[in-house]
Amino acid sequence: MSSLSQVQREIADLINADERFERRGARAFPFDAGDIWAEEGKWLAAATGGIHVSILTESGRYLGDSPDGRGGRGVRIALKVAMVCTEDPALRQGLREGGDPATALQVAELLAVKFNNDKIRFKRFVQDADEKTGTISVAAEFETDTTITNPTD
Image (tube, rainbow, N blue to C red; front, top):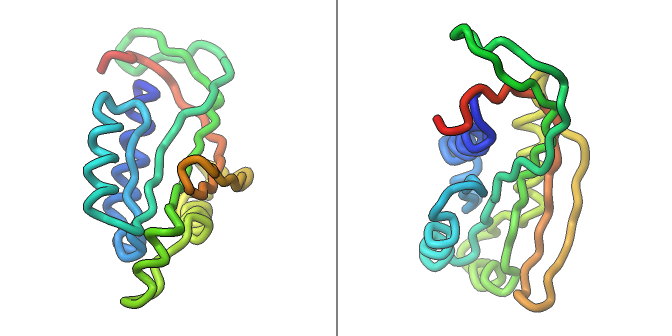
């Protein structure tokens, strides 16, 4: 990978291509996308009761310089990634008549199982509620490493 934005996009693409998340009404969005708010708003309006998953590259710690494979230099970093699952319980409640849609916690658990491997390690869950918006969120947090080679790609 050559940029933090690419890390976010690749993770979101993996989630969106997995039918297990689609069946549970979950859709992922890279946090760095220029149109994240517009795209999220359209999706949430069309998918009442769905789980929104924001992919964030929370922080990185310098591990050293690294060749980029093209004769240049890159920066190797230890990276903390959060996959934040958000639900609106009021919308979710309205869907119970036709089935039992997933909760943010259930989607976060599925993310922990899907992405915990030798390349990216699951670290913890953080659950929260926002009284103002009426939403519940669960962040599945991971650690990995990557090399930033050309952030504008």
